[in-house]
Image (cartoon, rainbow, N blue to C red; front, side):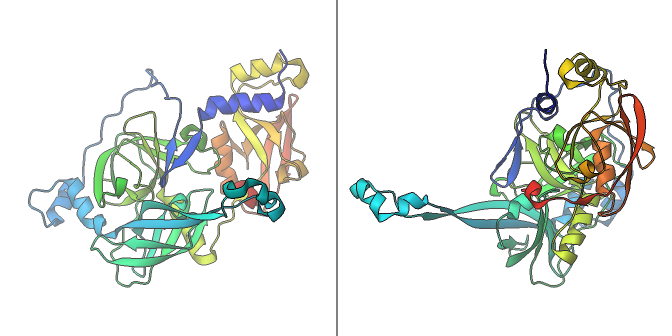
Length: 402
């Protein structure tokens, strides 16, 4: 059996990505082959709510639970975002020609028509002067949006910046003394901890759902959006169309993530961007209006014993992989930093900056944390021989972000 690297990349991508992803309304609708639970993994019990009593003591409600208290605190800082963009159906130049159009008579194609595409999403107030975090796909293509606060006030919002790579955007409204959220940390989360989502699903403002953290560290490929650079939080708190951009809270009412995606083939399975990622990106959008992501220019897959055996049995690849673990380079883009550094198809990455790695997700995280124009050290294995390679990441190409 002959197998090219192009075929190999396609084969592995299908295994990793499932059936792909699409955007519906103002949220990601992820169509993905449902993962089977690993029976060998021990079940995780929900952790006890050690801080619930403190929250209840400070609540104005007498019969509240910790969820109601968290919502009481954060709810006023959650907003509804209505966006619109005008699309034009352009006619080909040939159809604009009077000579050509006269043959159609009364049935000639109509002049280009404009149509308005509208969407609704959520967001939350980051600063008292009106800086708001939301999803990039909620406001993409819009210069201004309509922002509605919980108290009913409506403002025109200016889109300060959009980062499609992480699906984070910042909107600014002219207001003062706004209620703001309290940011928490996603680092240290474990499956079984409580999760609370607030947003405007299906146009139903200020809807609250609750569940648990189902998993952490889900890669973009696992979620079905391989073009993103996010290690997602997975939750079973219900996330529906319109929740995109709203906050995911912990049991103390702190924001730990930005709700962004649901899977179409499962009940109660949603994903959120870790707040550390969203905050880092938002700060750059506020200060510079854009975000620059380090870029190497490679496509990678996790190396497994099965994949290694398949490669070694394929004569036309002319490779003999000696390792069962590492990250296999299946494509190197022309004129990329990796190409200039001498990285080749078939190289297996073992370490990044001296740290052992086992997955493409780990490599991506190391690249994202590196500096554009700086040096990134890779230890690779090529034809059984270990090599050290120095790469200088450059800014992520704009054409790759769209």
